[in-house]
Every structure is written in C-alpha cells, then in structure tokens.
Image (tube, rainbow, N blue to C red; front, side, top):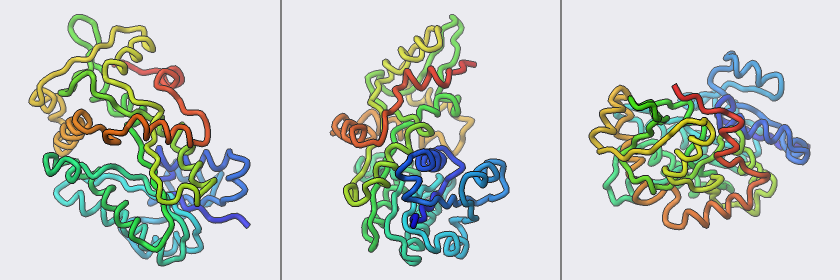
Length: 313
C-alpha cells in the first residue's frame, strides 16, 4: 500500500517540483500517494493540483487544520515561507515547529525539511538581519531533537530569482550595456539551483532511500558560479553585453530602498555569502556530493537560461 507523502508549499516552486517529480517517477509514484497541503484550496494553482493529487487545506497558523491534514501521513516534505516585520523570526520558526510537532503527534515516520544556515550564529553575531535563514536553521535544530527520522534539503540561490526578483537582474546603463550591481566582490560564488526543475531530484533521492540519507543534508545546487561567471553566461544567453559592477553598500541599499523591510536582509545575506559562502568553507565538496546523489541530471545555468530566456527590461 502506498505511503502518504504530505507536501507543504505544493503550489510554490519547491513543493510543486517535489509533487511533479514523484508523480513522474515510476518507482516513487507507486511508493507514495501525495497529499498536497495548502492554505487556499480554491486558488487557481490548487484547482490544477486537484486534477493530479489529493489537496487538503492546512494553515501553519492554525494547528487544528494541520492535525487534520497530517492524519495518516507517513512522510512530510516541509518548508516555511519568510515572515517579514519585527516578529518575523518567531512567526516563521513557530510555523516550522508546529508542522514538525504535529507530524510527530500524528505518527508520521519521516520529515524532510527545506533548511538554510544559522547566519547570526555562524557570523558570530555580525549579521543579525537574515531572519528567514536563522528561523529555518532553528527549525532544523528542533526537528533533529524530535523522535522522528529526518533529512534536510538545503537549496542554493534559485536561478528563477534573476527573473522573478527583477531588482537583482541587470539594469540598462546609459551606454546601452546591462549592469548587475551588488556591494560584494565579483569573485563571490553563488550556488545556483533550478528550483522548479531540480528540487524534486534531490528530495526524490531521499524519498527513494530514506534510511540511507537519514540525518543527512543535501546542499542542493548544480554548481558554484562567481558573479563574474554569472554575467558572462547571461551575456552569451541574451546576446547583450552584461557586466558586473561592485558598488558601495550604501549605494546597494539605496537601489533597494523601495523594498523597505527587505533591504537589510538582502544586504547582509550577500555580505555573508561573500565571507562564508552559503554552504560554508567546504562548499565545493558538499555541492559535488549532493549532485552525485541527486536522482537525475541537474540543469546548468546555461541550460536554464536556454529553456527560460532572461527578459532584460
């Protein structure tokens, strides 16, 4: 009999990737029956999902709804969405904690959590504003202490963000070139992942061999790309001249001033990336191990831009 796999964020990038991967994998589609958990069961995306899998209402701010949604579940893929504002850390941490606690309460046997690094702790208190990362790291710590088997999916920076978060994309300069301007060195390396295309390949590896990967973390990225390499790939893909320019922290914040609550988060996250690397000092080996163990070939940044042409506007 198929085990019920509950997928949080099933209408988003990571969750939808897990759903589609499992449905299209001959072995995993037999092993697991998907239960997509979403806040809004009548949204357009949820309606489309209903044609493929069971869709259940579940709101992380409503424990009773999760108790119903997680009844009879064997494995949970959990993720939390950032909460911005003065109590953002507590809100996101409590969301993840509630999912994990209810999963244990309802007898689930395995949880796969989408995590990020404890920036404040790793930086020795230098960077305190990257609360979406810190909250996820604390949820991971909580899960590791619970009486349930677990594994962790730790994604790199989404290739999708260059398109969806246009404030990070290159902007046209008066001379006609396209400039990507951050406050960090062009040598800074970012681990990039096609979130929609490849999340399922990493999570799928855990679902296929849960005991093998128990307690393990997949530092999920195709490869590490320096900012200099990223703009070179963009240039080739678009046929336009895209360059990287290092600017002052003050100017970087000024460029993002319209984001209000998010400015400091992005500024500190990028500074942390330059100093420590998202996956830490052993990034190259961690990325290589995860790629080697992923269930399927991963998209390079070049291939991603070929399939999803970058619209420079």
